[in-house]
Length: 114
Image 1 (cartoon, one colour):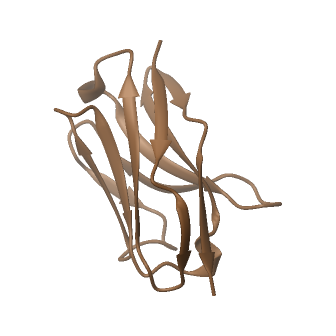
Image 2 (tube, one colour):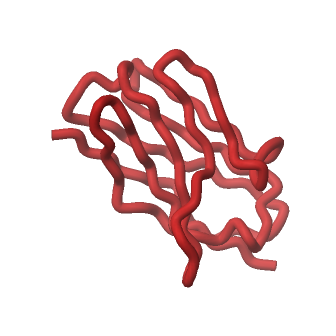
Image 3 (cartoon, one colour):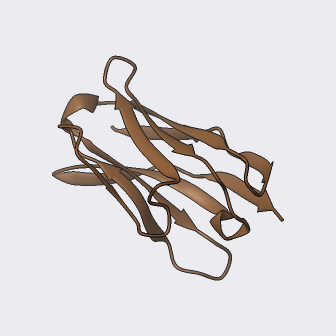
């Protein structure tokens, strides 16, 4: 069974940076597309970034130029580097993977103070 475990969340001031990690287990990581989503209090979960098994990336307009998604197939891990953070980036960040089926992690809290 695929499992995803996020880490790296925390509290940071506006303008700061955080790096999130998503550790994958239970299947062959390299064939899965990996994504990051977020959910702020009182709002729906929204797309942040995605990287295909081949390394093609896609970003939400709100994070383009500030966030970078990457993956290390040797470490079965996906990453989200977040720079120039804004208070509106505050949310629980969820890791997602897809290949025929879709799986989710439990999330990690990111709080950006103004």
